[in-house]
Length: 157
Image 1 (cartoon, one colour):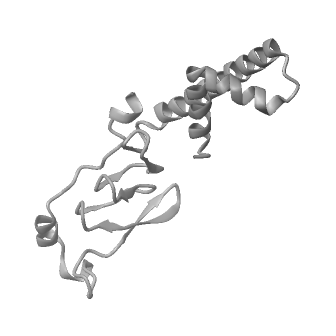
Image 2 (cartoon, helix red, strand yellow):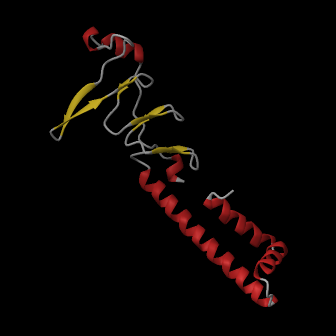
Image 3 (tube, rainbow, N blue to C red):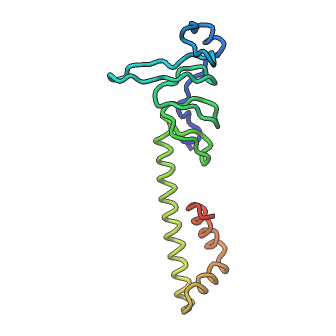
């Protein structure tokens, strides 16, 4: 839950008209009228900082503007539709824990489902394996739901 509800590292916005009023003419782009990129030296390397016209800020290095959230995010990785939030500097660790625990849960569901199908088909002593598995799935709706969950989690459907 922390990955979904935590601030991913949103950079505070500024007022565009105020920024443009303070910006000298020679620092502006001729075509758009927006400030040109500025260069900052970090650890002896010159890095370009682009101006975000939506947020009216110079974006820090490794930050991007998210089209879904309409914010600039520090160390932006991606916007995740599973959690409905960006994955960035402040919630990357919790997102990784979420993905890891989901993968472990998926493995447990797979193991329990396969073990239940194996046990139920052995009890039937059926020679034709696929038909026995199909009969077991039809007779046990919870087992069928677990199998569908597994297939959905893998992205097959």
